[in-house]
Length: 399
Image (cartoon, rainbow, N blue to C red; front, side, top):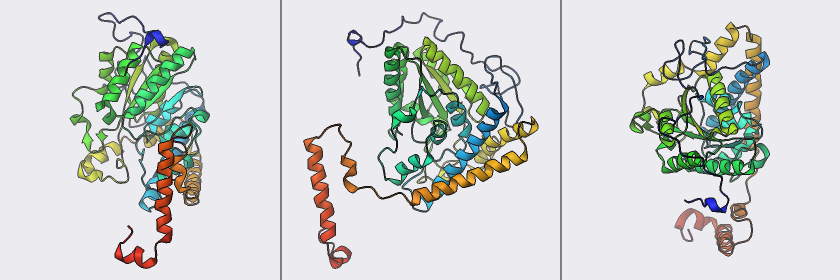
């Protein structure tokens, strides 16, 4: 892939000088008191710790809303897993365990920012105001996208691993060229960092100083391949090789994820260029409902991460700090159950799509090859309608 700067591409900044690869104004060092390896504002025990580079100062309602977001997201996500097990969905990619990374970063975004997700960012979608049913339509197979990306600046899910990082970088270059005061976020997992697309995206974003935040949810497994088999250095350190900042954050700490993502977005918006955020978290469920994680990880490991549950630690802090009481938590639980019921009913009532609808939006205008394929598909379907019961059940003729 090439970019012709003479054709109007964003102006590339001057190359960094030696020793100036990472801006000094972007803090990434964790002081005593929190976890030594990443930015943390809330320990797994629910204890607040301070950081000189990152902080949050929210109203009581805003603190409570983060809890509500995480609980509701986990509940409708669990409904997705149940519906897939019952045959109502073709597949479901659960976010269980990653609520803090997604709600914290999602709530750091402004309305005019753009999100390029993978396929597990249900919590980010929730923060963008998406109806969860639009996500379920995709996994039920009644739509090929499910929503208009322009309505919420939340682009379509991408099943090709890492591809959306290039889409996000290109979009961010366009944002910069237009002079817009907004940023772009690309979400991906640790497995995507092994893809060439991500390396290309990092390089282009750095060279063209694109206002893009690369938000990597390191959930420790690329399907069944552990992070130890994917990299020999912490993922956030890769950013320095491309000449932009990288920071590692406790991905199960919603406050730290919020603070770090806000700082990264402001850095990008102010012309500082890209930032890589590595949120260290854990996928508590399977990769998707077709996966069996018991074949590649231990129950002891899963128990260890359950003790770092992002919702449990945040609820403990809210209650201890007097920002919420048990009645509030009960109300949120009841709201979550109602949301799950609405999702369950809504999924089962989704109408089957018109079989030929998959040909409707391949090109903006008509295309002879697509029309030929559509005609062939219609003829194929008509053959089923003419089949006699004996043919369909027994001889196999015509199949």
